[in-house]
Image 1 (cartoon, rainbow, N blue to C red):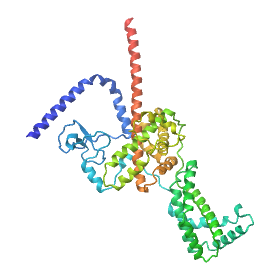
Image 2: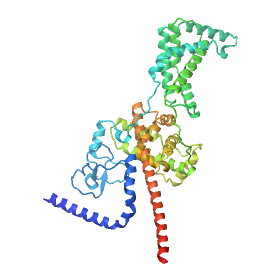
Image 3: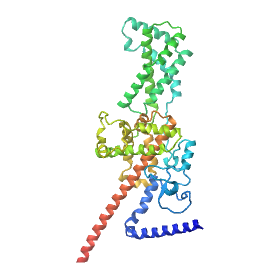
Length: 461
């Protein structure tokens, strides 16, 4: 009986408050009625998230909607809770109910595939297995180049020894020992190249990273040890000088062949923007702030998921995106942090330049589509899916993403990529709708004022 009486009192108070709030805002109804249907249509097309009416309210089952907090887990069965019932005090960041936290401790973090609209992380067209099949061809081509390369044109004792050793290796290039050696070397090189090279285009950043990884691999002892074992298995007499010289030359030639084939076949062509998209300094500084907001939001979410290996891996990568020291040397994009440094009082998440450039690459793609001139097209297509496809097909976006997500496995890298892109597009689309509606309302008010002024002139005659 007490519970029924409390329920009736709550319903009565809610109805009184709704009537009061309705009377208070009655004079705004005429101004917003013209745009209400259009705003709903735009939100439906872009794919913004809505509150599910089918969700129940709190564990107490009381219908009161006062002081409500929402669980941030998309698959939560209750979704809405009273703060007093869950004893929630801190109002900042994402919050998860106890049932979702217990569930996440037993399973991996899941991503909202429905909201992502069928987003697919770009797969490699030239994989490790493809490189292994071409290993014999790479080795044969590299050995043949010894006899035509200008490097070995000089007539010196060392060149003669290197050519003699290359002739012996060339004669046994099709043996099982040589095939096994070339397969292992190609697999090692593929792993190093694949961690850097992504998409088409020879950017200076990509070149620097690629050669840095290659040189760090060639000075290690593992590959030279395999080379010495191969020569011993083939019973080829040699000295250490020509052995090292020939091995380093063959290794570089195999690396170059592998690199060129990956650049040709690995990723789809670069997405061409429909128009020239530029950003001024103020816009870049605002984007720098947004670039820190998204990882900070995800960090708060994943830190709440205890005893979860995937969440722990995400937290480690997201924390590495932040700047470690204020004493870093200035870079070419240091101007994007001017406004951020003035506003920061120690609580903002300031990202590194590589992270900012990743978000900038996505922003240029989104900006080309979210234009006021394209509003008429939004009623006939799903803008969010189109933007997702453009971002996933961009070689520049993917290459910059893999630079900042190296520690993760491929599966976890895909999940985090989906979460970052989903949050970025949600924020971007919501901002576009709000700005467009503000501009449209402002234009309508200007027209109405002009009409009232002319009406007074007519009445004064």
